[in-house]
Image (cartoon, rainbow over all chains, first blue to last red):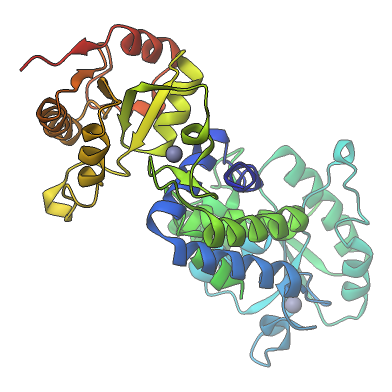
Length: 195
Length: 195
Ligand SMILES: [Zn+2]
Ligand SMILES: [Zn+2]
């Protein structure tokens, strides 16, 4: 049973055999209440957290709080790779528009194509005519760049202005881990994608 | 609910806000089955894993498998700080004796004294007369050393020979993280504690 717990902990990213063991012992020796709470939080989250049908972010309800809010600006849509990027942008910038969460980036070798990223849904959304600017905030990586180019094409096809966060993001970095100042600056000085 | 999961993950040692977030997203995006399994493993472990009444190691049964085994040598008893140390010793050495798990080390400032480490129980065990050598394998830290001295006194009082793992352990290190070769060597050349 202890072995099963150690094994199960390895589902968490960055947790190998040694740290899983340490975690299991810590919970059993020092914080069984915390272990119980974690067990319950995992069970409810796995069972009840789905995706917002409009922006694909995590949500317990059909529409997430951001999409359902009347105070957000529907003329701007920001495409991001992951829900964590939304948190980072909300915390670092004054952005008041909406989001579209790709839940990944184009990666043909891993079988992740336009369908997996919901790009049909994104195209429909841009076709509705309300969005004027698509702010493409994919990560500054090779795959993030390829995804950005693809998204910019879709935007242009629907007469929506594509823009991208300004350079200043460290190359090869993950947006989620960039300090607030850099992210706020890059967000503020985003440039229109002209070709 | 997502916030509760992120919060609950921080019960795990070494997991801060950022990694908790990453873990939650990873489970929700890529491995909900793994999350479900982890939830169940935690719940059963927290509820059903107790302590062996003889050696204080984790056990689902009153006596753990090691204490219940007929093939271990009852003349040697090895005192260790944590269950992880038993695994490390079993994997690195050919030790066939029994264990006593302190579940900690003397640390008066944290309120951890002889009672918390089960030292009355250890004294009773040594008083039974079967144990001839108490191998003290506490960590080579200040608190581990103080604990070792205290244990050696108890052993002598019951005419049991106390010994300690040979020097060669890196100072200030945690036994659990020492490479097998060093640990096997230190275990093999343990020295009797004469004063
Ligand atoms: Zn939404
Ligand atoms: Zn036992």
